[in-house]
Image 1 (cartoon, rainbow, N blue to C red):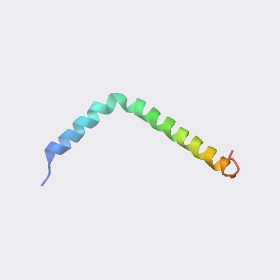
Image 2: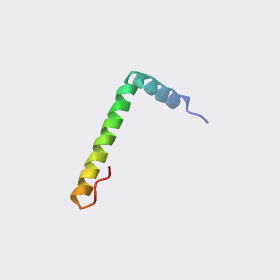
Image 3: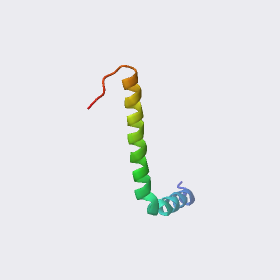
Image 4: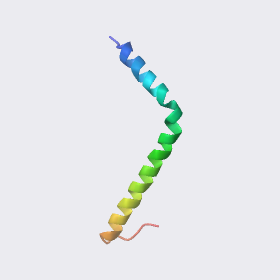
Amino acid sequence: MYNYDIQNLIVGFVDSQKPYFEYQHELYYISLYNFVDFASSIATMLGYPPVP
């Protein structure tokens, strides 16, 4: 009923990524802030007032 081979592969992959968690977390927030800044710039160019 359960496919333990796939579960073990997923656990192995997640464990192999643990040293990079902090880097991925930082990259996520940098990407998120850049996207929000870009969206804000587009909205400002379209005539919406900037949000403080």
